[in-house]
Image (tube, rainbow, N blue to C red):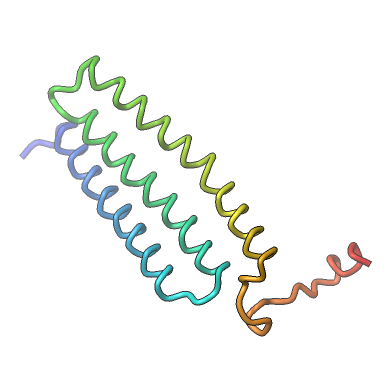
Length: 127
């Protein structure tokens, strides 16, 4: 068996798609397991973004490795790159807004669950 680009791209796409799907699965498990709003926001945004990017990279490898890859599919790859860019721009903003709303509405959970920042440098700045 020869190692040509089609075979290598198939293997790479399989690895990226499976790992990305696992990241998305771990994000959904985190939503079910964590009990505070901030922990759930973290579970939604971080692995979800990484999983989406990995799946899209797997699709890009699969598209470019196909023997039928031509000008028509180049536009598809461009759209996938735009999708990655859009996800990278919007997911952190969404997480920040969810965190701010949950803080304003008091949805953090019990006061005992919230960590207190007692770093000396931070205490001096706030005083």
